[in-house]
Length: 231
Image (spheres, helix red, strand yellow):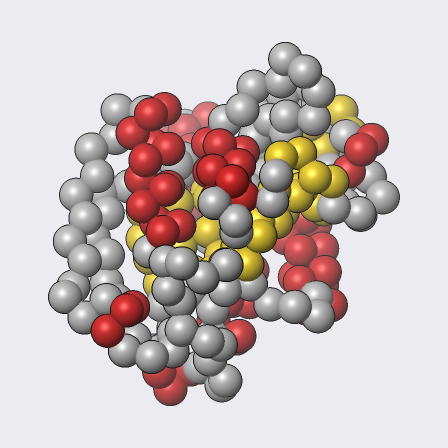
């Protein structure tokens, strides 16, 4: 719940989103374990908690005072590795959680979306600490030169595949995963990983990518384009 509340706080500072959250009275604190079914109604996001029968061996109960191992998953956002780099939504959320004593790992592409070049500091696959309690892990990427291109779509598929492979190799699982759209391929793999391991999963929907790609096609073929992009 602390992760969700901080995500809301960061959004209030950076956007005009009006969040209407109705947390059922049976929240995580009322029952032991992570099997508790909690439903959150957020105007901009969807939260998925695996049902009890899908949880093979739930970890310890979440409490606000507990140290949470948190995965933040977002590509295409500025990674503030150098002075003057902009701190955006994920980095602000991660830094805030880290300052509260939580262990945060931000999974992102080793490719700089804004500058259209690789990020050398993230190329070796070793997490880099950019703030107290906040580390960034680069996912191998193909790279691209145009935002709307086949190469970018292939790049995102590669990144999602690499995330799935690397996540399965992790010895220590997170207590919660927060994943932001775009990209839908990466979000799909993150959700599947969370479901398979009984980990609460938060989906932060920012941009309807790649649905927006259909806008570049004539209206008479947009339905066909949606079919091609359907997973």
